[in-house]
Image (cartoon, rainbow, N blue to C red; front, side):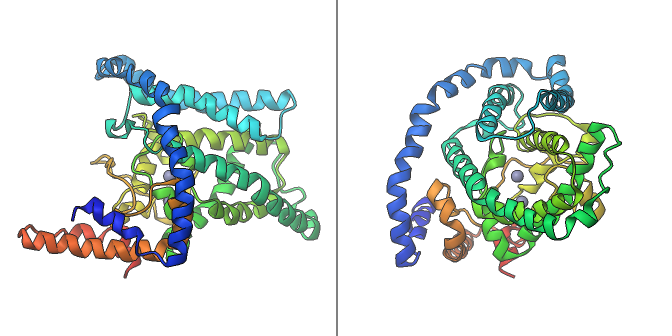
Length: 390
Ligand SMILES: [Zn+2]
Ligand SMILES: [Zn+2]
């Protein structure tokens, strides 16, 4: 039996209940993903493919080098300039429509640039994009209509009960705006760092976060790939500290925008060269290691916006003598779902995915023994499945 057939069989090991839920929802959503891939994305794919000859021509040129070093500082500076200009014009609230417009603008700029100067040509496909779009909208609705009211209610209680006495006067409003933004970004990311680390080091938490690591490639949009329930806890976790620091609403707004820019770069397939920024922010280079199939590389670089908490707490990983691999994902679980419904249900079906992955691994090593191939013991000891199976 081929590995693929074995993966198909993996689904049948689900309990009868999950099996029928799975199949029912898959019949509805599979066609949506199919149409997304084969119809909706087709014109974009054709346009992006037409850039390939130019991309090959750019190899080794000065223009490429300039793009590689300048894009990041340009985008970061533009975010500050546009952010503070919007604040001046009275925009301080991020709306649903505003977020979508921002992602469309990012897409029109990032997708062609990724095609022109890719880190990995293997990552240029778009098979997973419809799934990511569905996850984005699902997560957005859940975030705005379920997470946000819960977070606001919690923050309101905290502010009402404790914060007025404690929080007053803490925030350094006298500092320049961009410094305040960087301070808020770092405070927020301190809490995010520990939550993210907990999700990697604890298997129950990992079953929610694994969805984010299920991507087999990195590109500008898939930073949004995550399970909505992961967001519920995380938004509470940093919502409460934010209620205490009481930063001005304009600073919160610009910090949110900067986080969006950092997030698009963090997952981009653009081969940017960032030098010192790799030691300050969560950048594509250090985040690629975070998505490694090898757990010793993957359980590192937890920072969402900044990276210096990793440096401080000993989880920073950026060797000088090598480049991150483009073979990424969840190590040891080749049967991890890749469809919208599969991913939504994955935290609940995690045990059977894991059970099947163990069986597949056993078969693989039997096959290797039969062919007298050296078993990949070293590789096995360092992947996700082995880590959570200790
Ligand atoms: Zn992670
Ligand atoms: Zn990521």
